[in-house]
Length: 238
Image (cartoon, rainbow, N blue to C red; front, top):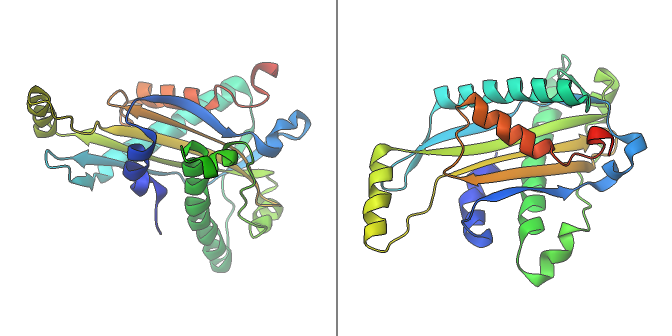
């Protein structure tokens, strides 16, 4: 499966290297506050924490990735309980066929979600209308999940974090003395709510930070999750 987090480096080059606050990509159908999802199935998050060498080579570290996932689930649990945004449900026990369908839609969200992010931030005039005309969908293939779980929507979470080695940090300092700027180490986290009956992406948000966050640290993950939900429709009665 092609992960859009694996393509974030190219996107960073196109949208600029400065740190960016979270932006709501779309409120979509969720603007109707009377029909915000109340029960949401939590799809297994896909987070990758990678070590970035002095030469710019990245390698996933499983222990770091597992810690990031643990921090994410804890931060989500605390945040949702505090703000009462929606109830999260576990994915129900599925048949092999249903598991395959779910995996296919996770892969589809990978592609559709990346396009929504990329075109929503594109500086090219031909694509700027997509920031407002948000009509992305995965189709109706997950409707069985609504029937089996009783949920209204599914929550997809994708993220990637690069941790520079000491050699990388030293190389950046040395390069800066020569007037050369090496790319910073990005932290990227995205969430999307997908209507299980229609497949429409109801809401999506992301946060991008440069050299300021570390998903392995619980306090940094809490800050990222808080930023993602800061403008969630219906929060604080708005």
